[in-house]
Length: 252
Ligand SMILES: [Zn+2]
Ligand SMILES: [Zn+2]
Image (cartoon, rainbow, N blue to C red; front, side, top):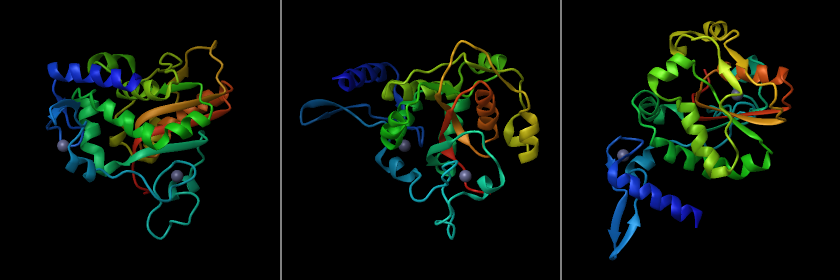
């Protein structure tokens, strides 16, 4: 019943605002008449759905990255054998290269509507697992305040809200804040990324005592952003820290 209502709400919205396919950005028929009945259409084109690569097969037990050919039997990916992470376990849904254009538009071009598709994909793959982990709070990776004002939204928070609704775990946006405006990570190498993030995050609230949290970000590359935040939460006494990203790169 809940899902039906949600569909109706989304359908009504899409009459006013046409929906864009999260893969090609073309318009998608959100309502269709089939056999004389009004039905809700898809969120993306059938062909586009086949183009996207979802993470499947053997993954690194730490970060969730797909293990490369010849390394399928390994426990950890190359990066995780060299780096100590502060989180317990990471999950991801898509192979980065197959969805990078989509995430770019989601992040920089106002396509917040893609979050509906992303959220459903996350629920499909990890919904049951996440519920069993006993997560009390979903924490989106925060943006520097001024940057968020300029962009108008924090894509990680939009993603977090979309997942939250589907798995019924609350989002806490004000628990951790970004205290420095860090350089765009893509301009830096691995060492630069770590230095760039030093003391970039602060736990803003001492009154929230979580034992188990899930940190959300759009892309996982080296994990340095998540590690910085996870480190702060460890100090604050959080016992179990999981992270979930929409897309993950290949091992370097
Ligand atoms: Zn499409
Ligand atoms: Zn790994």
